[in-house]
Length: 442
Image (cartoon, rainbow, N blue to C red):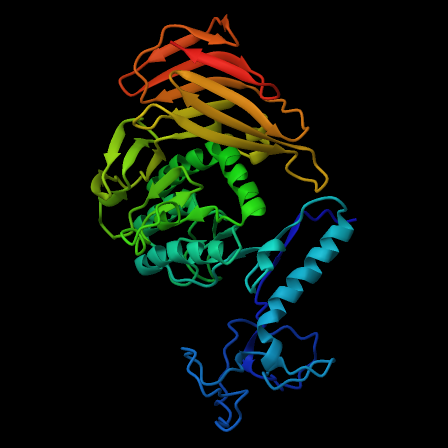
């Protein structure tokens, strides 16, 4: 049997390069040579047929509804007119594809990527936002598009990084790879016949990509936990600021992106810019790379942003589980955990971690809660019976001044403590995530 992990179903609106029925009378097994361009004049537009030219405007730059898709007056085998069920085509194909993969690979979660979706498709498939342009405008609008689909219940979503149509540029591709590393679904993809846009084509893009992807891969455990929150509560993984900070002040912000509740990404969206104005809601925010903190006051802060750098900040009051980044997700999962404890102004923080086998439906699982207060870190399994093999072997304490001794459950442990101006890093720990622990750092 052919091993298949997933399927990509494209053009499933369904798309057509004809208006309605092609009517070419050519053999079905004849493959046309691209580019697939129609030179025939458009047929007569019957404006009295409401299924071809409806009485309301839909901002369709084509001449009628059937342009580049199946005839909207077509009758299905059940007697239903295509006009009434057109938007369900991709959704039903997604369901059929998923049913096949579940039968083909029993008890294995399938990966399915669909261009056409409908309400409820997020339970079946992932999605990308379709054929965009290699332009700064589309780089910007991709953020709002990802937000939209997260709210629609499709959390695994992203845009074609560096643009699908048009030839990208070195600068645009670098900035897009930086942002795209934080899309829930992250993929560079462009049209046939256009300039190649793999990151290694330019040294600066390769450097920017490596830098951003190292952050993404370090955050895989955190992001995986955010996906389970999406399953349990319907919350999007990529979120606008207003989702976490419900104020009209943040309602129009489509230039920054939260991943989960704790990671704030502030990309450069303007050609030639080497700085970015980022809004920081009230509270502490810690630079991912330097651990320096910003006291947010619901106002813009201008951040340096060299071409190979994207600004990432950790929300004060958060505990973020991380792992050492590797070349594959499987390799990352084999690494021990490091907890980044980013304290709030009052010295507290909370976080969580979800763990399962990553592949099956009947997997065991475990939810683990973390909390920090008065220099004490608490680890408490919340639910689930899975045995978590990897331990917490290091801590990064942000907003904490000095440290000399560390004890776990009342026993002083021999570990290494490094104090920097912005952090306290404790290594050499072995904290079991399957039992309650109390870690004191003094």
